[in-house]
Image 1 (cartoon, rainbow, N blue to C red):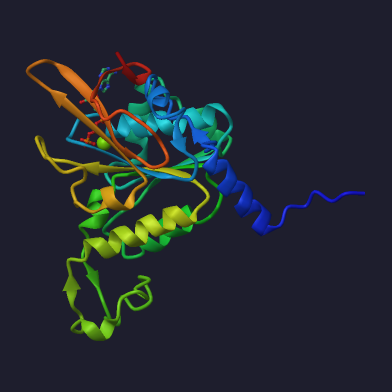
Image 2 (cartoon, rainbow, N blue to C red):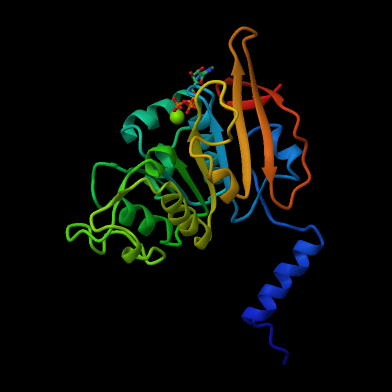
Length: 264
Ligand SMILES: Nc1ncnc2c1ncn2[C@@H]1O[C@H](COP(=O)(O)OP(=O)(O)OP(=O)(O)O)[C@@H](O)[C@H]1O
Ligand SMILES: [Mg+2]
């Protein structure tokens, strides 16, 4: 009798071979037209940064991504720092994404992360690493990346995993603007999870950066920018980066309507 039990090495080899063949598993974004220009969707377990100015559609993209998963029975987590959850659910429902049935079946979870609470990182990372979710959204990463951290203070001792920082190098109780540290911490936890993630970043109008912090675009596997031209009443979506994917860099015309974002 032959055994079909795969050991870890076999698993890694299979994954490597499938990548060489270009057979990377893809996760549909739910954005009509986008999946066609990125080989069928976001690479499974990847992290994609979606950035744009206020009103460009970042939250709508995030709803759409999560809702697409829910439709096929995948579990989703929506971490938000900006608004109360009820407001978000109403906004999503108005666009045609009714998460209520999925919430009742525990298929999806919306969690408001209050940045004024000290244990925000712990709560967030515990959720991310719970291994429960196929898709995770973090909307948005900007307030998190701009939070100060306090090293070596008694109050915050053990509240932040600063194992990769040598506290001796910094003055006691130093309040450091360490964006890179925050972003590495958040992105590392998303990377360690088994989920496919979308994180959003707020840009100021006309910004030439891909994220507010200027760092996450290097750490993420993919970068999608959303923009609009008020004088022409036009919206655009551009795929600026997508690892393991051949894609156009050309900005694509999009519209937002009931059903979310779609290519026109
Ligand atoms: N039903 C709708 N039909 C058409 N357009 C809509 C509809 N609902 C929202 N919009 C458009 O989408 C915009 C809001 O999109 P969204 O909330 O995703 O933006 P955002 O990039 O997340 O903004 P912020 O940075 O402020 O959070 C609105 O300003 C409006 O232009
Ligand atoms: Mg938003």
